[in-house]
Image (tube, rainbow, N blue to C red; front, side):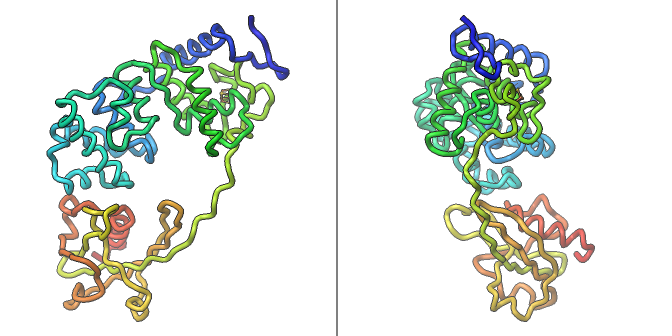
Length: 354
Ligand code: SF4
């Protein structure tokens, strides 16, 4: 039996309507799906790498800067990654931010080599036990690498489901997250999961987009409750965002004989990364500001104020931590730098003052 809700959407409840929904998505994907490089492989390690990259970074950025290809060229296997130097791993990851993702990839590679004889586990519990692997990543590896049933919910899937079910609760509350996972679990097929999961994610990226969902070309519009009520853009419901905390960070850009001075980051989260030396307000009080820009990190909106310091004494004071001089022109030989500091150096070069 097929029914409609009071607004005309087909109700997604019985097995036949769910399988029609799955079929509609899969056929749409077969005609419209993009051939991303990570979709051309079923190597679970490569899938894990791509999913780790895409967790906090837009697909367009990963594609344009060839992060995935460059990583796979440099560390083609888990063995290669497991035995690599951390500095090289961070350098290859540079620009993607959230460096713990790169460290976790190496930990996961080591765990696969040490505990599973180098063979990627195919079982959900064992995959979930790998460092840095949560329910989403485990579902992605199960489905994309092994075509086994793995449920996934990312921002795109959550948006699609919140609209299809006109889900009235906030999708970022703990109850809301649980419910969206239940919807996803209910709709995920037993077979062709690789296609289904790719399809629902891509539908969220390209059709059921945040601001202007293109409902008239959507393959699942007949089941979409929000569309039939004409309120698609009211979903997903989200908790009010906390305002970012503003901060000012002052750094010294010491220049001497075509070289710049960089220091090692302190603290375990940023271990292995380098930066421009930080200046306290007191250190900077007599220094001229050269330029500034804003960047965001976690819940902070930071204004980075750069003081360019030149001359024979440059580099003798003001820097914190251990440091070294690096040639300004040899960008490839710089160590792994936090993105804002790399941007500051590149902006300094663009000013033509280098
Ligand atoms: Fe999204 Fe519109 Fe499709 Fe509903 S009909 S899933 S709102 S694009």
